[in-house]
Image 1 (cartoon, rainbow, N blue to C red):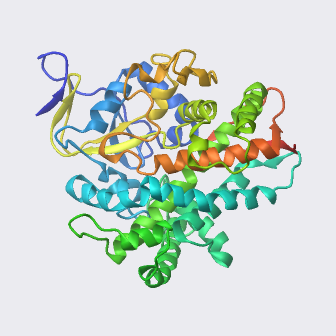
Image 2 (image 1 turned 180 degrees about the vertical axis):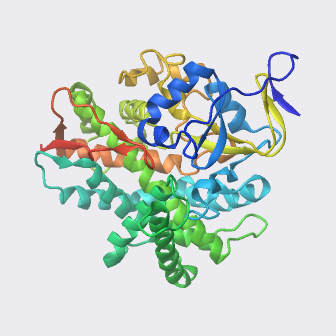
Length: 443
């Protein structure tokens, strides 16, 4: 039995409760995740069990728990636990694979995220950002989330597919939204009118699109991700099958544009609430002397990097991550039986006063070299996960977010009314309930 415990005392049973009959804690997680995770910690401590979405799960809270699960020494936990939520919609995406198979697929895919590949992607992103922002019409009540989502999907299409899907773009966007929302559907079979049904339909549309594109991409020498995955080989000559490529494209395109949109929306929100920080970042961007910085220039936007990290702390795009124990193990004296679903909560760790000074306060300087609050524990700040399944596209995401925000700062100023607080909708990934209306002005 593998362990992380401080004593040789007999193992304890995990405390907890199942919530409402049949529904468990599903509605609480969907409607008020922020409060729920903190209430569970205060009631039961670092380890507890609960029920939601038709499953029983064990919650492990805090940086030590993140480290225990992410490092996964001895291959105790399977990331295929995501299949309960995502398999119908993101079948065999990289995040759902485990152990040797995951290592092989990740090694093949890594070639699409090298520094040279990132430089090529930036060359596509930059004119796309310029054109996208030029089309924005500044006004009061500008729904910044919707505009950012449209922009990041267009950019992801250009970078990853090699072109925007044209007339299909809106249908594909809706299909991605449907597949993401289906993961947290209460009714988990394709009853017409339900999220699950919409997700099944959306997945079929996406598969059809990528399969139609695949023969041409197999012959392409392009630098888009789709073409790169078709050409990708390990040093032993291993390559992706057509089915692998379709699955990975659907997953990566969803992950890339959703997480970037959420990160940007939260940065924009806090910069609207804290105009002094917005001005500070604008001056930093102006100091670069260009609207279209290269890779090295983007890396110089240090203060913007702090703001990005703070936005990701306050709202990690994936607030909870499931795993499944593949054999009996223990954590801090509690028994975790084989087969148990285990959940860790970046949202809890990032927003708990046990680990951060004034955790609800927007304070980007906590990530400065002088303070470095995040370094007190290697798994205290985990918006990209950790271990073998750490986000493969994190450097692409940082580059894209910085490139977009840089141009926004040089083109626009934005604000929200005094006292405005953005509420999060947790029914899929956390997004602004009201789509974040701002007053957008051209500079």
